[in-house]
Image (cartoon, rainbow, N blue to C red):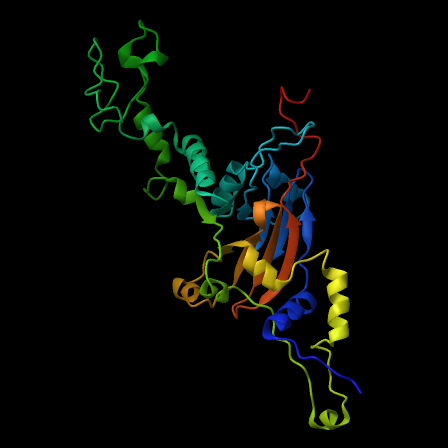
Length: 336
């Protein structure tokens, strides 16, 4: 007679994860990185090499608004691509803001990564910090030079750098960089442009307790079909619950290739990405679509889950944490 071992709830989730959830298609981008289409947040891209939005356009893909910044933000492999920036986020941010009218989300692995990105983008978008922020030197008071022309305004913000101009250059002809940069920061609606107007950051978080893990998306439930007639004949439909022998067979085939759902949610750090129009109350109640991205230890692999409004995983994909950069991209001076 057929004997069937009923798996535990955790084993059932692992089986459902392996057998019921489709794998999301993954697009390898010519310049490097991958793009993945999700139901919850559109395309999500890992790796941001230079001119990456051209790859999406040429492939007929939507330019993503969500980008995963690699742990190594510069290519370290010996070869033509050595030193190439793998976090070239500026043009994706500009394209999303000016063309798509939406923010760009950067998923980063550390506070330090966000700090460095903020420092770079603040200068390229808003101008040098000394022409935007008050002087931090306590010793400098008015900034008034011998000829009477102040280099620091009443707000304590520098108008220009004295060493940038020759001693005999007419002081009255020196531009006020504070006013000029402020002019370009004012948007048509009258509001001042800030970094958060274009960028939003999301961090990976560890799963410190079971309550945190319980809010993660879960696989569909296994639903064995057992009719009263079949129950008496021993012909129960076991398509959803595997026999012990079948489970062992699946385990042998997938052990070296994939991780179980239980392993993923226990060992991976996770970042949650929500649609831009998701209501805060639905986010708090865990009743909205989202993407959950798991970073495996050391960032060697990532696993992405596409999750519906019922907190059910409807798609999954695993990809390498190493960005394969096109050999046609190089850094001048490092290309031999």
